[in-house]
Length: 463
Image (tube, rainbow, N blue to C red; front, side):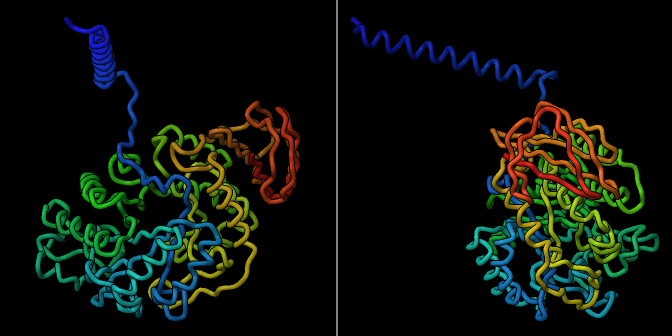
């Protein structure tokens, strides 16, 4: 006869099995229910990316030597600044045929498996990666998969991997003036496998943490989807797309560019543009892009700096206000080489044009914002941070919002007028006892709060 204890144990097992079966059945039913909401972003962000900021490194212009080794001495300063991801512009040898300028464009790649000797050796690059990792930071490299230099060996070994013009000749990317490069044809499986293999090579060989992918939208999304899958099998990587599109976020890219935020801020403060364009950007970002898609916010990068103007000429007296917005809005803030030192010239793109390093208020300004982002969950990236919640105000050209996550809260108020403004913000979410980031003053916000700000003034309250 079965003992009483054994009988009870069997009943427990049967109940557990029935419960598990029921839960599993409900889960399957939900998964097959076309009316159940599903997360668009299927990739998994690296755990370390949840509260980081990013910094673009222009190795050529960073030091008099323009080398990996010379750049290493700046790492402690960048660590203090509060950046976490160092994005290095392309590190590969530059093509000589049809080269622009005397030393050419980073984005004209002659050999995907080699290091530009102007920057140093492969071992010196590995040493730089190791030092970055030792300091608790991460490194991604710029990747140019859409086109190569005219004298890349692939033009001889696999000419079928390139697009051709009407006469059957190699051609630059159609409709662009990129005369120093020629366009790949991703209708050929061979170039897809080659490019995926070389992407994997750099992760395996040098232990980099991912890539910033040039004009990512020019290549088929399914190429990137598979490349990310194969890279993640080596280690969790971080992928930044130089593009502004939702589809790239599903399986391939952690982050894409917020080009429209830059354009909206510039038009508003320099060309008397419509303030509502800022609202439209955030409305589209909130309703069009998935919640867990990272967006990269910036006031400067190498394209803007070299071809359009400096941070000062692009944003004038409103620069600080715009920086505050890029660092506190949903997304990850970017700093370009030299910004924190008050870079006030357009760096030549095809020539040596060294950055002037000097003490500047922007270093501490950025430092305050980046450290707040790292420590306050409300400002974290994607699903790890809080949504931007608009706060009603009765002012003109006043942007006010709050973000909240796990008891952490940040309230941001920015005056985009070129004159002093007095106004009132009104909401329940703003209530609380805060510290203002820049003045360090303790402030109690009520449901209705009167605020006065100078022209292009701002307040960042946090708790």
